Image (tube, rainbow, N blue to C red; front, side, top):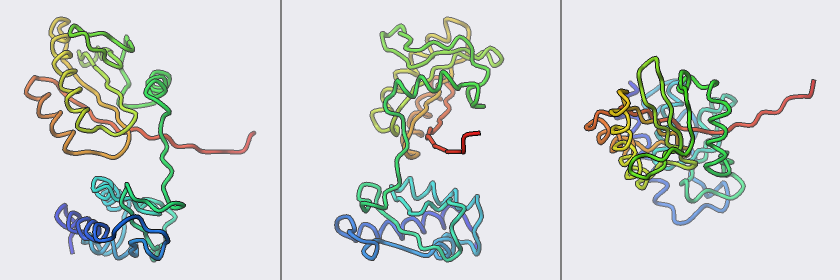
Length: 232
């Protein structure tokens, strides 16, 4: 068997149908849709697991709004691990994956500003200004320059996942950014930083609109992780 996009899509469709066939949220583990980890891997067209495969499956499940418990990418999973699958909107109480996120959009913006040098995608940015009012009157979360690439970079922040509403907003920012960059003699580049799950439909619509107007786009997903260590 060979792993490819078609095999992975068939695997996801199989579990999506099983979830859709169950009315309501499960009230116990016995009622939850479940599968062995190795069974999921084989259904995706592989004989053995790998980090790359599990990451692809994890993203594909997320795009179909399926949550797994434990996460497929958990390195502590055993080969015979039993994986519970839930509709993202109908998880079982007590087995929900904790959602780690910023309290509001201001907190996300402040974190980005304070830690921008830690992220490869944001290095080289200068003159970063928050809440910039553009010529249309709209406000962009962050505006910066990347002199090395002669880019004017607009950064749009979403605390949660980018949805259909984000498409319209981003298209307006693309228009504004293109005009502003032209006045300054820069190439326009839009960076969308969002939380939640990846949404290929939203990404495709924004990219198509931006490409037609000569604006390059980068999509980034943010998450927050907490680690504790003993006080030295």
